[in-house]
Amino acid sequence: MPTHNRRKKINIVGHKNPDTDSICAALSYCWLKKQIDPKGEYEARRAGSVNRESQFVLDYWKMKAPRLIMSVSPQMKDIDFRIQPGIDGEMSLREVWKKMREEDIETLCITTPEQELQGLVSVTDIMNINMNLLDNGILATAKTPYKNLIATLEAELISGDPEACIEEGHIYIGTSPEVIEEFVGENDIVLVSNRYEAQICAIECGASCIVVCCGALAGKTILSRAKEKNCTVLTSPFDTYTAARLISTAIPVRHIMQSNNILQFGLNTYVEDAKKIMASVRHRYFPILDSDGKYVGVVSRRNLLNLHPKRVILVDHNEFTQTVDGMEQADILEIIDHHRIGNLETGSPAYFRNEPVGCTNTIIYTIMQEKNLTPPKEIAGLMLSAILSDTLMFRSPTCTARDRAAAEALATIAEVDIESYANQMFEAGEDLTGRSAEDIFFADFKVFTFGDIRFGVSQSTFMTEKNRKMAEELVRPFLESAANRAGVDTVYYMATDTPSESTELFWYGNMAEEYAQRAFRRKPEQEGYFYLPGVVSRKKQMIPPLRMAMQAEA
Image 1 (cartoon, helix red, strand yellow):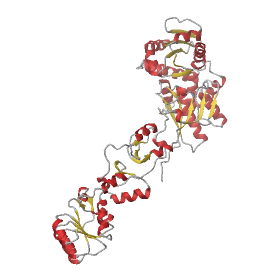
Image 2: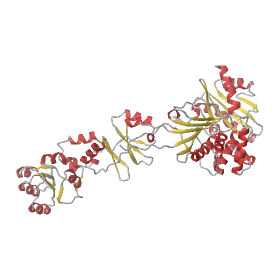
Image 3: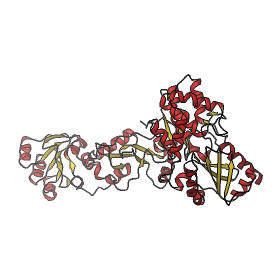
Image 4: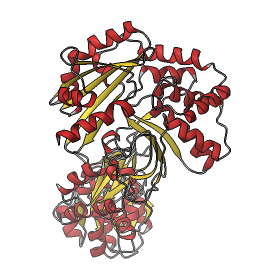
């Protein structure tokens, strides 16, 4: 049984609400993996919108943003569903039944030559129509082509047009001239034996077609009169009884196909959603359509057991709260990160590289050196941008000598001046033109978990006091809404001033102020606000003391 060949692509993705390091790490590590494994299929992805700083970087180096990915939950394209070709709606029921038995399938889909789904037919549909023994007008009702009748009865066309269609008349068995004269009328179809009297009588009564059974031949007189009366003549090897049983199965399958409210799935339909729908109906097979709405195959409940998780590589994070949805169902192959080790679990062993440096791209650059690889100019530019962004141009306490050395080497490859380029990048990132409070707050926002406590921290960095003050005025009234949207009780907003290496901290939520007072051992300058000189790093200077304060509360 042919089955869908699942894609073996590996997604390289950063955290939700991606910053410049997350976007650039996905792109640079994707380039690296393709050099190490040329036959592998790798794609850089992003788990949120591109912020203004990252967009400046992408535009500057003429790189496209990674495609958005919102979930890695398994989809229909991740299972081994059945590749079952569609059938022509003109195919006879007998041929459909034969195909079902040969290919051991209970449902077939009817499609156009362009693979557009028209309907489906099941074994039950065929059985129901065959049990309707009283409908002797079914060939005309179904507009049955004569070629179907010829194929079904394994007949030979003696006289008539094989491309014609049966549009009127009923089916009769011509046992004798007396019976024929009583029942047969204009355009009827008559099954006859080799008796001359029955054959000529059927023609004279206006039959549109006579089927001579048992392989008998029609004489010259019969053929001549049939042509005069425009009567089609067929000869079939089957006896009259068998021919009578078979003849109604010549109707085209389109006549009985289900075409309304067909339950169908797309390649991108999530498996969990499909399971719920399948459980609510008695059908066994369901059509699958591609992104263009074209038919590609069928799926059954049994196919759902052959599920292949999406394969992913995580960069710049290692906590479930920061991953895209469905990560617990994915196959995590690698993690490249520079943050604390969080609560993420993998189903099987994974390559995990976690180093105490200021930027994920510093680790990636180290791996490139280990592999004796030099990135092209545009990739070097992306990596340099990420290091400058994450280390605030080497001002962050998370910055190490390795970060600085990597940045200087990458700047040489990229052919840019570090200070001049960094100023352009930071200014682009802090531009507030047309931006909303929501946009500013969630541009670089992360959720953290400590025991039963879930809290979020957003950070914006500024080169000018004017932009920082404007951002604060927008964001402060939005903090309550931000907490509700993020699904956390407590949020903090870090407005970091890069030149002075300080942060103004704002908060909202249950115990937010108490945690901040314990963490930084000070009283707020005003309600909901701290000034924190020397604090510029969320990872190293904000999260650890907040966790300690929460631990003391617990």
